[in-house]
Image 1 (tube, rainbow, N blue to C red):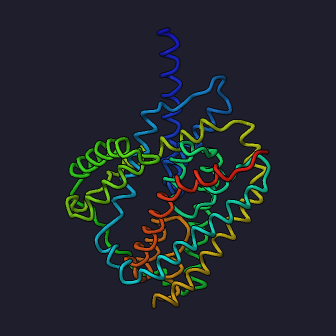
Image 2: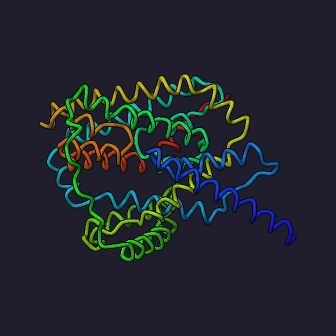
Length: 354
């Protein structure tokens, strides 16, 4: 008994060390969400070479979901709501249109054998990659396929966006980025995070919120930010990275040779649909520009389906209105995360027997 427990702990220690090292390498290579990719790669390696299956403990997954929820909720600021209120009709219309584009692409993913309607929809949801990946399994989707395709879209966006912004929309790549706001410090950030997680988990359970482990803390963090109680506090960087690492591990260790074959078969269709979604969102950006009175660059950045922090860096560095871009991106993030449980329920109800 003790020997088996020790072997399990040693197994996890090796996987965690590998995940951290891979995350550091990917960070040096400027890979988006390096902790998540490091965890995914380490988990995948363990899944393919290990003789036994590992499973992320449920408390660790719940904690990771809660931390990602707090991180998303902390993006909401009073200024965000003011900007959305000033342009509420075009912004809301574009957000709904983005959701419909995602849903259409997700249903086209069903053309690939072995992919359910729920998995296809979650794999193609435009935005909120970490949150969607974290809640996928709880809502009946194939978390491994969803995670791989969600972050494939993020990588495509992060690589292509600076080029498109500069060559197509005339962004000035030499502009100085806005100075970073470090907030009130790590101690306040830890307290803010702990309160949001504790209260949010209770709220999610008592109110029976779907995927309450993520959406409960998200609501609490947003409320504390909007009321000014948080005073700019956020999830400390290492804590947030640990959450991403856990989600990456959960996806990676769940992959098998069979699921990798499904991913491989789905890649050509998935890449085509990802490019289509990105193109459709760029078209919606032009429409947003015309209806909200913002520049075409700001419309494009505001509707880019993912890569939030890279989008904000490009907006700040090019002199675009980063507040407007953030407001539209955050509204879409909230809409995608909160409609995901309803979408999953609707798709499961409408699924016809094979």
